[in-house]
Length: 209
Image 1 (cartoon, helix red, strand yellow):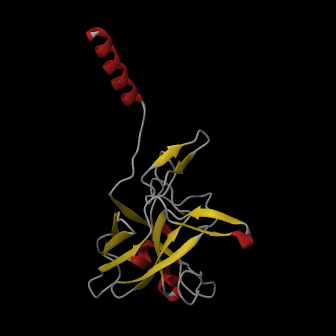
Image 2: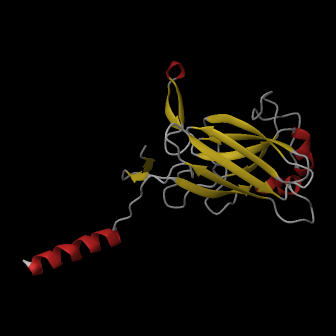
Image 3: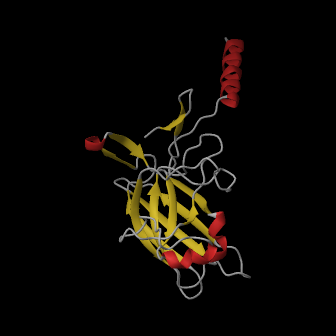
C-alpha cells in the first residue's frame, strides 16, 4: 500500500513537471514597449529612454489599471486604448506582418507633465474578460488584451515621419497621431498581457475567462 502511494505521488509530480498550467492572477504587472519608428518623438533626444509600467488589480465587480510612464517628452498628450492586436513582436520589435489593431476601446487620456512623467488609473473590466461585439456587423465577442497609447496631436510625431494629414482615429476627435507605446504578446501564447489564464486548444491559445 505504501509503495502504491509513493508511485502515485511520483507520477503526479512528473505530470506537474511536464504540464504547463495557468490560473487567473489577482494582479499582473507588465511593461509597454516603445513603437520603434517614433522613439525620437516620444522621448528627449539625449535623455533616458521612455518607459511605462502597467499594473492591473483584479476586483470583485471590475478591475483597476494603474499606468506609470517616465522619461517622455514633457507636456505631450496621449490617448490610452485597449486593443485586440499589437503592432509589436514578443521581443518588442515592429511586427513586419502587422495589419491593424483590430477592435479597440478608448479608455482614458494620458498627459505628460513638465518632467516627462505621466500617470493614469482606470477602473473597468480588464483581466481575462474584456471584450466587445456587434452582431449587426458580424463581429463576434472579441477580446482586447493589449494596452497602448497614441500621440494625441499628429504634429508631435511629424518629425519622425508621420504625416499629420493622415491622422489615426485614436482620440476623441478621431484625428490622433501614431501609436507611441504598446504591450507585447506573450512569446508562448501570443496573447496580450490582460489575459492571465490562457488555455491551449491545440491550434493555438485562447483565454479562459
